[in-house]
Amino acid sequence: MGFENKLEDLAVKLFTIDAVKFGDFMTKSGIKTPVYFDFRVIVSYPDIMELISTLLYDFSVKGSNCNHLCGVPYTALPVATLLSIRAKKPMLMRRKEAKGYGTKKMIEGHYKTGETCLIIEDVVTSGSSVLETVKDLNKEGLKVEEAVIILDREQGGRQSLESNGVQMKALFTMTQFIDILAKHKKITAETAENVKEYFRTTKAPATEEPVDRTALPYEKRAELATNQISKQLFQIMAQKKTNLCISVDLTSSTKILDLLEKVGEHVCLVKTHVDIIEDFNSEFVTQIKQLAQRFNFLILEDRKYADIGNTVALQYLKGLYRIGEWADCVTVHSLPGEGILKALNGSTNGVSRGVFLLAEMSSEGNLITPDYTKATVDMSAKYPDLITGFVCQNKDTFKDPGLIQLTPGVQLETSGDSLGQIYNTPEKVILEKGADIAVVGRGIMAAKSPETQAIVYKDALWKCYMKRISGQKE
Image 1: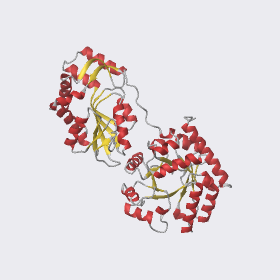
Image 2: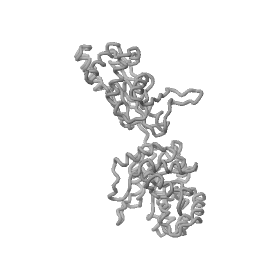
Image 3: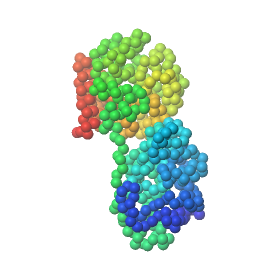
Image 4: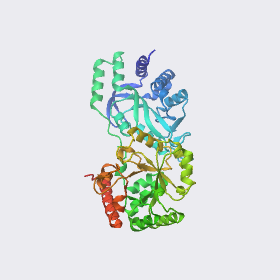
């Protein structure tokens, strides 16, 4: 029997065992419906359970690269169990409420942060039940990108899930299911048309909108951060009322320290390029750390690591600069793959450190593609304790409110230089592009009074941030 014939056989069997009923019912979403699905009864019919699991396996699970399966409690749990056994993939169980004793865990099973989980569900109306499960899995550091379900009621659930980054695959749509029942004379053509008309015109109430990280204040985002450096940065920004990072692209250690004496109280982050400093020495490290403590800013070494893991670990810890000893965070390219993050994660020696991954660049003609950016963000999910945020240019690059968007190329007026650098205004960078921290270099260093200019940038950037969280984007 082919796949389509098996689908028709399943629809008829579900009707026969009263798993689908016609009448006047109320759904979990709070809307009336002429059709109600009660798939809880399928546990009493092993042949139907087997047919459902076979169809779901062939339809989607067989080709999935997920690490785990998780059924939405409670109806989908037995189906997820059968699929786990058949696919030889570990299953996780989500509780509807945490235990008041023991571990008090919401997710049961063995898993690692950054692993992926495929959701199994019976029926989707608004998508709220799936999203509740996704939320609890995300809290444990698990990624959910896809849900496989038996029936899509076509009342907005698919769109709701997709807006939250979860793709949905359904064995049946409501339209297909009703057409099958009409074809096999289980319902009249008139009933079928009336039901389909109802579903064409009646949508489920909207589920909770995904969190817009750019609308949240830094204090709230500090609570959501898992990396200690991003948490600390959010707190510094809120306390000092500044989201300005200065890029000290100077070749003299004395000039760098003199500049930071003038602007240190106005910045949250200082970005260095240590390998351009001609007179680098240990005393410079001691003094810049003292300035960081006195003025309450963090240090980002813009090293842009891009080698194999072993080499990067040596570059980070050894050599003349010993960056891992003094830089709170560093920039890293994702091009070499996950090994580079694994190496840095094992090189922090228990000290709170962070990584900004380069997801996008501000230089004209750079070769970073949207697929590369997405792969970079996906890679970061495996290292929530290490990743501080992303160097990027667009607010849609990532959604996690606990991470920081660091955007370079900021000047008071839109411009560019002869080497392809493109500059944007504070308004464009904060309000349109979604930056959390804006990087300014020559706009301050080249000014007659760097301190005065730092204040101008600080005030402009902070004003844009306050406008952003108040919802005044214009």
